[in-house]
Length: 498
Image (cartoon, rainbow, N blue to C red; front, top):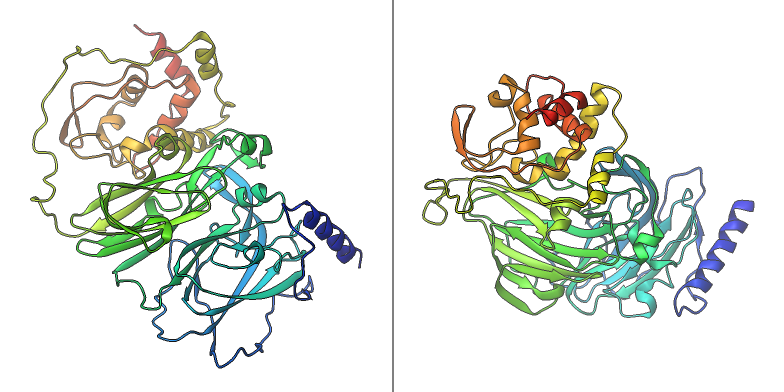
């Protein structure tokens, strides 16, 4: 009884705090016993002659199949809020607030003219009330008032899908920004009555910005930082809720000759996305998820609280990188994914590297960006020291992802003809000190790795002794290499050598 009294008091406080919200008039709540699984009513209230069907909903990056109906229906959408700790990045955890246990929430696909009934449940373990605002809804708060739900309760409302398009949905309980920043957003597609043009593959990707007490990569459970959020200074900008969510083993996959459609959303809460796929041109962009179609687009803007649909055909194989082209967000804050395409090459469309010659108009000296004394001191201070080899490997992976992955890849395979592989590297395993020298001094000129010649330039890296030792130890013990350990003392000795 005390639990429900407290929940009711919390709900009244949040209702009064919400922006411009009047006291909600919504259907009565249904209490969910804390000891049982979530249940939904087996019987549905009939609405005219519309057939009732359960919505097919999928977690990202999967997309439900096309509607393939030529008539409207009553579509039952069942949503559950879960607050849970999950991985933000390697070694970094975060307490997400979620629709359905993942970020983003599940993809919902309905048809123009459908009557959509939303059964919205807030799990008994939640700490605060939640609701949902569908941008596809015509009505007060997009359903936020009708779904304002205390922990352990279910609220129900319905709306008619009047206008086709791709729409964001998000939590709108005060403080609204905090709920969205914790991961409470997803996409709903209202297909036009005639449907969308058929494609071979469809994917679901939503960008979001996250604000943590610790800086990017700082290990441990990181709490939400309201001050950073207000200043719009995120530590993480990611696709589908996590660093690496659609990269490496989790990469999107397709084949040469296939047509691809990506439903792109931006939960925000603050940043506008400059969505781009490196090495591809969007044949069609449904601007902001609506009816207007733009063609032959390199990069498309997706506003916070907005969406877009991009279509393109795959002509050549390879790894195509999805980024927010506000590019530091991609390579330094996590907004990076991969589309791996298999199939035959087409040298007419893309030849690959045809030649490689040395060009040094400014001389051969490797240059670094100068640091102030204060900046140099910050770099030298670095993170806490690892106490053993296992901790070095763990910390080194974070350094690799932030500094090395852009050139050498998630799997350490490099780029043929440009960046030598670190995977199974005979060059490093023959003399691990070469790795120390590469980080401290850079590398230029010809080297041979795994029987292939490379003639490119790697600049010196501004890593302190601990970070350099950790990342090299990680590389030596990853990607099929034979193991080994580099210590901070090894790096310091090489740094002092002339």
